[in-house]
Length: 195
Image (cartoon, rainbow, N blue to C red; front, side):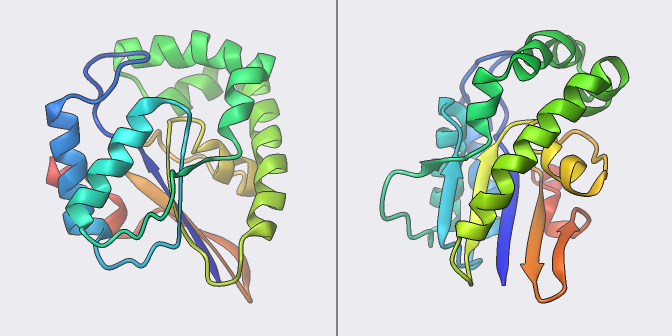
């Protein structure tokens, strides 16, 4: 069995490329303490943007039991977001506009840029499948990333449109003898009550 838990980074100090402030760090620490402690994660992945590193550090402080033996690795999908023309257009177009207006980036992207979303989701899934296959059996991964890039994974795999992840919220993909399945409804994936 393999489990991959995707979590969005914590609260930023502003829109765009901002890092976490003290409020976002404290929130992520609470999430680590209340939702991630005792989970036995074996692998940790982040993006190249510092706020994901900050969030993972706060999760680790709160949980108190993460065994991070080396610098977390970059997730295999984030590279797509910085190199693929459709992804760049999404980040600077529909996603940026939605974030500035406080709207759901996934819904807005699908409404205004569905062709681009479909293309990026395909590329993300094409990167995800061999990455998942390369994980050892028993892998329990925590991946701290971004919205809507994370949500492109279940969209590309299953055609499931998740609402845009709010800060520190997540979903899980579980691979076992029954195949690959999505868990987006477990109560421990909703961090908002801890705000």
